[in-house]
Length: 231
Image 1 (cartoon, rainbow, N blue to C red):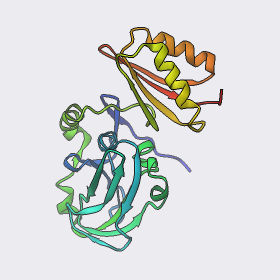
Image 2: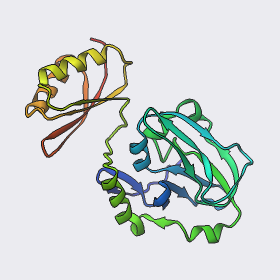
Image 3: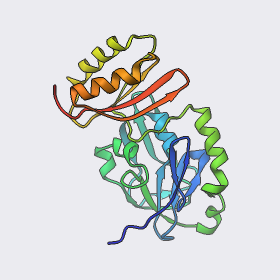
């Protein structure tokens, strides 16, 4: 099977495929390639706002949905909210896999983390309310700035904010955390120690762990660390 290739518009490290349409006001994307089965999911901005998802509930297959009404709800330790439908219609299918693996929506919002498909009842009218990425990128950029969104190469399972902490103490805490989590899990670490990039790189080599990403914004370093082995 040939997998179609699509380009992405990258806005502040967040990806937005150009083959989709967007409803920025409700943080959702829409795939209209099949007019009889419109696929819907959330954009990375909402994923970042919500954090690591703990629970997802979706309206059942066969439910009639009005535009602007709830398709389901998302819940994390710091967030609870509903996902509003960009279309009128009837739910044709729901993504059963994300009900048991909610973080799949964080990890793969466009591919494996879609929410529902809808058979539209007023497709042409509802289509007018959706935007191509080229028509809404300024609005999306504004939302990224407003909600202080950061998109990384992978979505973290754990977070460490070590501002005002010496790097040696931070690495001790990181070692302790890694003893408690599973191999393959990802830790986001923020540090304002001026030696953090050098020290964390050295630490990763010594521990045989992976640094997936290093980013510096002003005086703050942002790291993604993946646990590769038990030490």
